[in-house]
Image (cartoon, rainbow, N blue to C red; front, top):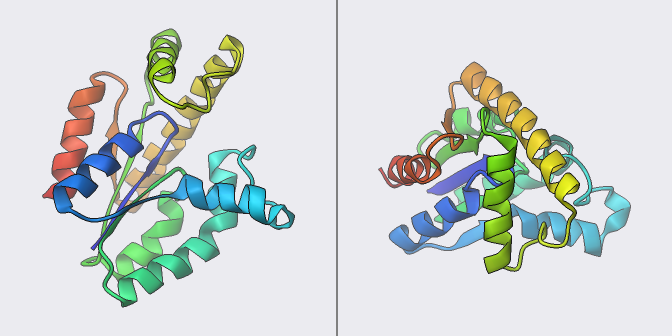
Length: 184
């Protein structure tokens, strides 16, 4: 079984992925690692970390689809998380392999920008975080972009009947529901 967790930056994907992987006793793969491999290893492919998540997802999709199909073929159990998957792209694979994939998306469509900014600041102090050295205005712009991205993801999930969890109000409660859903 492949457990796919995608959605907006700072929505809790990595937290969910680590907990599900630990609960299941299976490996976890971050799509950020793959994207950074393209960014730093083969920049001529035009896939890099400065693109918006939907553009990264579109450019990476043929690669990711082939990788996921190979993992399904060899019956690999793995949790895969990252921004680089969109509902409108993965739905075809899900319809072909519904028993081999468990998919959900996370986002925050109605979060207070200043509140989310403070959460990011608090988190960045504790971890090796890519936003730690960014200006306040950069981080707030990132949050605004991710709110818009979350709204697009939510609409696409509804259109394709895929599961979406919103972490806007009670972050940890939404994370717990997501873990329960995937661990089901």
